[in-house]
Image (cartoon, rainbow, N blue to C red; front, side):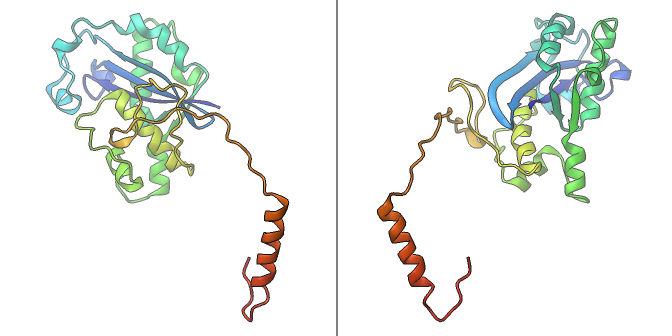
Length: 229
């Protein structure tokens, strides 16, 4: 199964008030393993970024001035996410902004829900940890994921962190094996995830080892106390 862990940064909080996407970051999971295939782009929103938003993500108007428009990257973004299950924290926010961007293009690309399943990790966390804080920082602390390098929000960094959170939140252990050694994705704390080492050798017990094991089991079964297997 292909999943895309996604995050966005925006000029403000509400697309209905004219706010736009300024950054998209995605990392890919296939069969719950990070592949190293990511999508990341900064976008010129064609409007001013609110000061409150800059205080959150640190992305300035000057930095965005020469970046592509959403319409310039829309097709490659669509091609990347099409058919995947999107894993998003507070999905209504990001999906709302993405669908608004597609709408501003005249609806040439349909809403995200038309070609992607959407999984909201915030809803998952609230169900699993009711009455507790369930923002990304709180979940990192709860699951022991070090995110001290996350001084400001950033879409790609947050997507990488969310991938680790999601794998633990959904009951599985995070898999730190990536397909490529030169992937920009890093483990919490700055240590680089190691590349896959390929198939592991199967080492079978010899006949002598099997006999020794049977003798050991017989010896410990002769005591006064019952043996718990």
